Image (cartoon, rainbow, N blue to C red; front, side, top):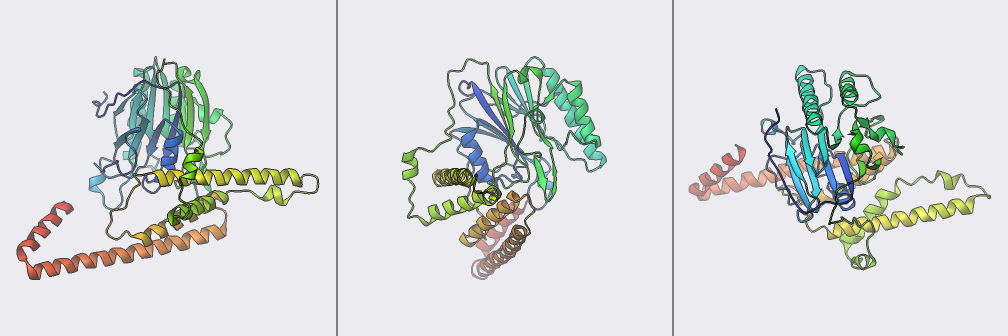
Length: 421
């Protein structure tokens, strides 16, 4: 039996064309800029591995006036030490009429008039008995949902931790589910620029998917694996474009281009704007392939040069677009740790840019790998150093309080005990 609905939302009428994103973001906070970019380009976003703590306020991350937010964290998180793990989230444009249900921390649905989206984040096979049981339960949930909504258009999106070209135990289970329920893995049917959705070092696999039934496939426009350089996750996002049959009174217009007025509003005398623009240019330009230009001869040098100039124009425009979005983002996430300061923020930006350069080289550049590892070591050293200093300040403050006012001292200790619990 299904669990009782935990979250619902009903908003205004829907739209005719729908763009849906699935992404294992591998830490929502560190990948916040890319997710904000996806919000401006799409209508529905399903995120996995958000790494959020229970009851963490999400207003710091996103503009809740435009998107409805639904989050489910790892239920066992309070039993663990260190950073949070797992967690899923739906971001849905409020102009679309919808309802959201969470059945487990790994299975959820979004319901429209005649369309059902099932979001999944399945376990990977670590050969443990508990994992095998949980995976079987998740597959059972999905099949129950398929049976429940069999007369509607259905799409299952997310991180399946299953490569349909492999032959491992979990891969076979998902293949059997696809065959049994007459589903179509549409991400495999469309011609893709990238042959993987997950890459770690030199290893890669296709473990994120979009599975649909025949009713959904009739309205399908395209499915693309995205590979933007802004993405700090080791997973690529998948974008599904779908045409709805419902009679919508409201159309969602996604502004892909920034108008001239907005561009002119950038204050180029601002150090932040200039640094942000330079960072975006360097991040995007690292992915340019100059081999065609280098191999040009007298017969095609003009043509190759024109292509290169056009590519450079697109890069500069894209860098401006990203800078405008960053500057206009009023609700940026702000670190609240005592040890976090401007120096740590600057080092973190350098580290993110270095990782993106290394990632764009397909993790093959020894130079970029060395730069990334040096910056990562430096970041961790500074982090430990500042945490230690912060702890010393707290201890010193408590010692002074103990000597001056015992009553205030014990009140402070009581507060700290509550925070630990």
